[in-house]
Length: 505
Image (tube, rainbow, N blue to C red; front, side):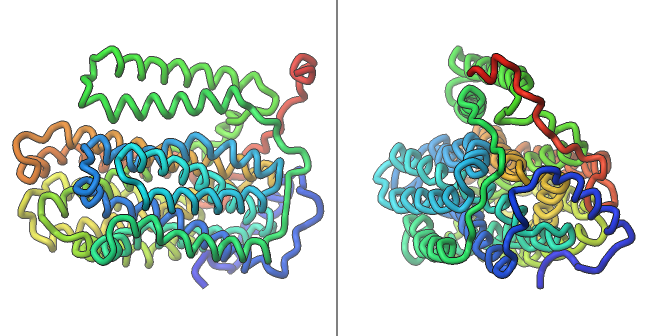
């Protein structure tokens, strides 16, 4: 089975004791284990669907541009409207799942994601497509973090949880890697609408299996809802992303763009101050006292910024510059997909046996290597050169997700698993939104003359930023991770007793 090895290591017994202490609060009696691997499979189905959707849409962008007459910023919003909404609602979804029931929240997410996917395929303009992508994201926000919470509460043994998360990371890597190939085939054979409609049968299968096999679970003392914190998160992500995407078009010094960045800065400062004063915050800043948790979130932002930027720029380069068909474009990324297939399960095994540092260093090095290679790309760069870059990225990205997830979730109380997992997923989506916004904006804004001749050189700065993201992951891995499978000093955040005024509210 793909995943982390179950062979015991010298520190496993001590780690297991530490994990038992870290749990602190229990979600009632230990969960029923008869169907635990089937439950993992059901969660992986939803992850595969959402992961596929993350990359499959990029191959459809040139077709969407032609059919709906979309502008470059319209294409960026087609991707980022999804990721911004997703990032804004992930923490709320995790908290709601702990309060109202993880299975119920998971099923609601599947229904919303299906509805959004159906409507996206029926869109007749860029505006309606962006709106329907936001509906799709509302459902997606209820899937992955809630699924991680279900896994964390199903697999209570530290070694089994490492294996389960290793397999989870492998599925994430595989789904994202296969997206370009599947997307290219669907766009060529059916049209861009098919990249959305392919989600419908997968979601239907997941709904049936969830109703049959996934037990309901809740936190014994879930967090109270935090509408003020949620509103601040939405304002922060929306204004920051709008400013980055629209800056090249409206002017970086325009009152509208400067105002967006000012509002984003105020929202960020207010959010941190407000959450620190709350007994049960939406964003528990105390989690970040753990170096491994903080490093995992920062690495998630950098890694997924590199991924999203790579997919966006690469799709435009291969189709609009090299004039390859969507299917041909997808097939050219097969080396990346193949290396992700190999390295994802290997990363899970290394995490279980040696800890997260080694795969995270490899992930950063692969990402940086790909970015550096592509800074020399031109309109007639040999295919073999591109394949080398894709292979490097496939190795890097395949090694990334398993150590990120494990570093962030391990050692956190199971009663807060939904929130902890949601923060990790939020880091991924924030990175993805920033990747498309930043790399897309700095590249498309520098194009001079016809796009086909001007884009390759204009994209060099974007590829350099991608390389910098990879180097940041290497640095964070060396500074914040160790050889153990979890940080024994990881905190077990327990909110302080509510103040009388807060109780009164």
